[in-house]
Amino acid sequence: MSEWWTYRPEDFLLFSPRVYWRMFELHNAALWPLQVLALAAGLIIILLVAWRPRSSARWFALLLAILWIFVGWSFLWNRYAAINWAATYVAPAFAVEGRLPLVCGPLLDGLAFDRRGLAGCSGYFILAFALAGQPLLAPLQGRGWASSEVFGIAPDPTAIATLGLLLLARGKLLPLLLPIPVLWCLLSGITLRTMGEPQAWVLHAALALAAAARIASNRVMHAKDDDRSQARPQALGATPRSANSSALAGSAATALMLSVGMPASRHTTIP
Image 1 (cartoon, helix red, strand yellow):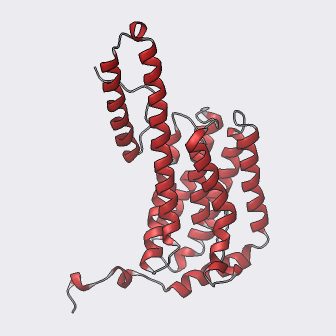
Image 2 (cartoon, one colour; image 1 turned 180 degrees about the vertical axis):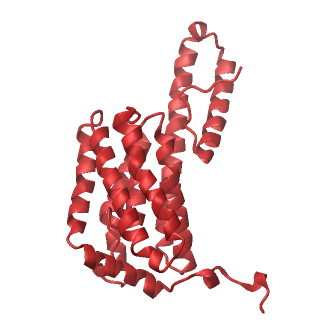
Image 3 (cartoon, rainbow, N blue to C red; image 1 turned 180 degrees about the horizontal axis):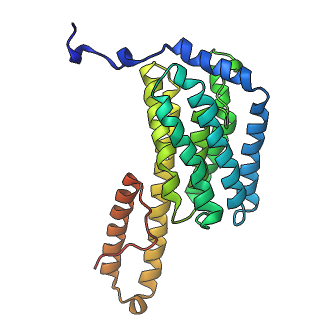
């Protein structure tokens, strides 16, 4: 019997790349033409966020909830679980993610779409790629349109689009929506890398861009707050030296909170 350290990640795969992509072909054929409706829902979400950022949380929550629950049930539970037993444990997480926007958005008024600057541009870019770019990867890699991954039908573009939408959002309850899309992108990226698929880098790049945009946006926010503090030192009881100390502490705390999925406060100070 071979020693355990001689095994490679590929030895633990339960399916081949051919079986994996064939699964998407069968899934798309069974659900056609729901792909058109799913893409239309994605465009509606973009329009709502762009044109009515203050009042779109309710519709965003409803559409996203339907899509996450549908993907978890139709793809993970009914199809992916047939070739990967671990999918049966991931499908309930998709159902949880589908219900979270209903709680964080309209019910608790925990979301608002008014993000601008680098985070906003990155969010729209990631969202546009998930809707329009992800389906193009299949024909570009020679697999044909039948195995394309479509937002609202397949899990990868649904998770990537959610990351883009969350970059456009503000709210104290925002960190509740992040863990499941992030973890899925990590798990799916690892699976694709183990199969030797270059598409894995798409998921990792989306995560890296989202994290970098979020950190940069928070640093800009803290820099603006420090400028206001220095302009009113007597009112705030701070000197330029203490303001600089607060800036350094704020940046460190922001990076730490982002790494564990906690919300970074708008003002971070030390006693």
